[in-house]
Length: 289
Image 1 (tube, rainbow, N blue to C red):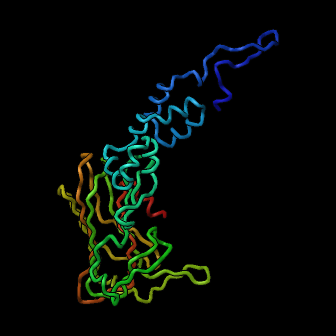
Image 2: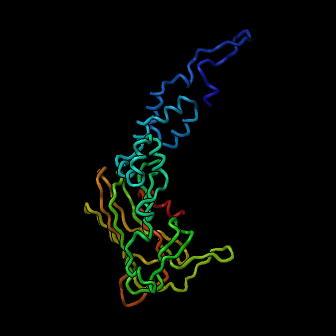
C-alpha cells in the first residue's frame, strides 16, 4: 500500500509524455503526526496501519503511543508476571504485547492478560488456587487431569455432605466494571474411542437445595445469589457477582464462594475448574465457549 503512493508519483501529461508529480503522499506525513493519530486508535488498528510504509511502522512503535494503551496499573501487572530486570529493557509496545498474552503467576495456579481492545483485565483462577473443604481427603475430592481445562486439571467431588469452595484475591484492576463467575460441570468427562463421554453416575443432591454464591470486596461491595446446578455433562458459567473499580493504582481484596452446606443430604459428581474475573460485557462471550 505504502509502496504505491509516494511524493514522486509519475503521471501522464496532455501530450502523452511521463512527468513527475509533486503532490504529497503518505510518506510525507511527519512521524510525530502519525503517532498522535495512533493514540486515538485501538491496538489492532495500529498494528494494521503499521504495514502501510516505513514511517507508519516507526510511528507505531513510539513509547508514548503504547503507554496510552496500557492501564494506569500496568506496572503492578507487569511486576506480577514479568521479571523486573526484563521490564527495564522492554519498550512499551513489547510490554503491551506481552501483557496481552495469557501469563501465569502464583505457581501457575492463576492466569491473567489484558484485553487488546478495552485494556481491562481478564483473570482465571484454577481449582488449585481455591480453598475447598475436604480437598485433602481423597474419599471426597480428587484432582483429575483433563484437556478441557486451561490448567489441565479440575477438582472432582465424589460425595460429601458439606460442599464449600472459597477464593480470595488481592489485585490492582484497571478502572471498569467486572464480573466473577465459576466454571462448573456436573459429571466427569473423558475420551472413549476418540469421542467425549461424560459419566454422570455420581451426580446427585444438586436438585434438592440451591447452591449459594457470595462475593464481597474490601471497599464494601457485596453480592449474594442462589441457583440450582444444571446441565449434566456440560461446562456452565455460574455468575457469582459484579464489582466496580473506580480508582486506579489501588489494590482491592475480593472474597468469593460457592456453598451447599445443607447436611440433610449428600452431594456428588461435581467438577470445579476455575473462577474467572472478566469485564462485565465479556460474560456473554464465556457462554459461547
